Image (cartoon, rainbow, N blue to C red; front, side):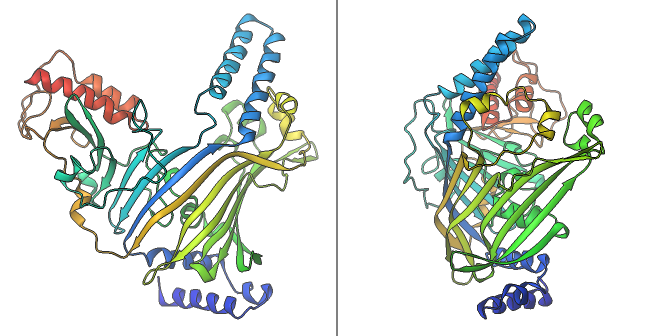
Length: 479
């Protein structure tokens, strides 16, 4: 950040502490000034370790919405023009019913993460009921804590043997290394990815953690970082100053308008509504300049505007579709302010099951022309996060980011399109010796099996398990 930007940020803090009114304090404040304030606080954490956990649960409106869909589909099945359409409706209704009847449907899922970064490298350690700890394993307790032992090949086999790890040492040619945290057929398993894994629900970043898509898809970033580091500043405006509790905040709004229907609708619909419809996405953050320019609240809203034959329609309701609320911020000496606890909620209009059933099969044109229904909103889904340990600007061991696999680990290296075993580093799993140009010796289970599995099953850790299984069988054949 330049000296001019730093002075602007300090000026904003001073104006706020002096208690200037909205016009005085915000008339000369630009969106860039506020975003720069956030970035200054972000970069004041030169290194960061955050052990945190996230609870995800379905709200009452999720269950009611699915009940409404089932009712609507069953009615459509009765009036279906053919047996084929009837079967499709009943099949969808059955799928929704199975989702409602899942034993854990009303339970919150819990994931624990331990994030480390020196801003050039990062590592995520993870345990989860939904992922590693399922299938008869003990349920991970709410008060689970990550080991503080130094991470090295020796401790990977002991303290970290049940913990999945994704690590990047800053060198793209070395790839992103994944330690599965489970043994298969007596061996540890791993993967070296050529780029960050595509699945986003497995490797989540905490707030103030990431500012480059190289490390992970934006969907894996925390909502706070997404707002300040991905939304276009040129589409932001400062609405003024508003109080959130006893804090004076800048209301910063980003408005994005999409008129190209080819980017939001299927081809047939896009052609019909091109030039007539547009989507408007509006995101507002209430930013506290006295606490690192962190947002005390963020609200998301999106709606359609449809113009046809001199008639103008809008689905705007004035209600946010999502809301983030920061519940606790802590100051860290020598660094800055960190958002240690908060909640993100998806919100929908509260409707009866009968009203929801009537929405099933609603035509898009009817939706665009319908008058928005007013009323209260309820929780559809909710995610809560809490940082249980935050360490700022400590000296991190760069070697741990290399994530060197221990003895007796079978892994697939996507950067080289080959499988290896650390037990015999000089030999590929398919029988070819590293460094030679000779083709691999043929084996009964050909390599396309697990290469195809890598592409098809690249979700939620399944990649490593499928590859590990194939490679373990391959190693036995090589022996």
